View 1: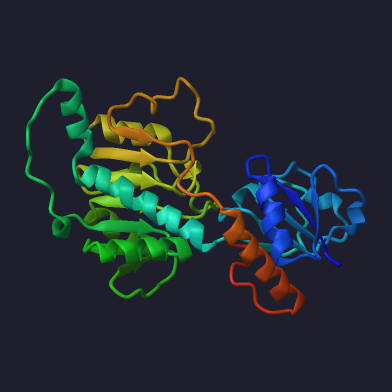
View 2 (view 1 turned 90 degrees about the vertical axis):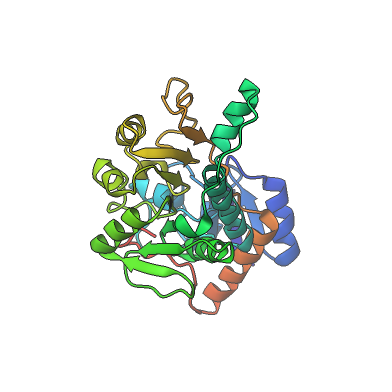
Length: 310
């Protein structure tokens, strides 16, 4: 019988235990800190565990992230370098991320900030709407989540563009790649959605140079990682009138500091990292399938390439 350690201080442990037990009744699930014998742990299902916890498990075979991002794992200097890491990309998460992206774009596209201000002022004024065909959407990051977001925007008849590190081809989506492709997509798109993984290459990618290339009066939506954005550069682009607004779900430090300028900036919408959650039922199915694949020595679809950081 295999043994799995579960660690998360934000996920509903009882729901995860129930879902996993239903799908894999022979799996021994131990919830931190009740590890018992560390040498008995085969697998770890975790979200931001304490530094050193994973390296304390001498027979660990596989690390499974509860979320899509794994950048936090590499912050642990003692992370075992010979244990495979798998990301979570379940259907529920992809749906929720795409719902959030659509909501954020439509918030600006249908001029909701103006109408919300008019409601407070008792102002019944109508304005000519922006046309979908004239306002392309760009998605930065074309992994499983980015591809689903792109497909849903094409279904809404937006001209949809996508950027990835290397060339990709997606039906109905104009794909760009590399440095030149990044400049091209920024110049073309009215709405830019960041779902990039956080790596040494993408840390701070949304800086003054990046923002300068964006279309005038365009909008930024960030559901990747807070460290993608250089906050002071984004604030400058907003204050100088180059950007029309920003919709942000992720931040350098969470919770966001009470004195951060984003809180009361008139062009910024913030949410507390809620673009998506991992549903225990869907997530448990993906975890169990990945464990079976691992035990049968089959390919793991969301295996992390350590040299790339995702």
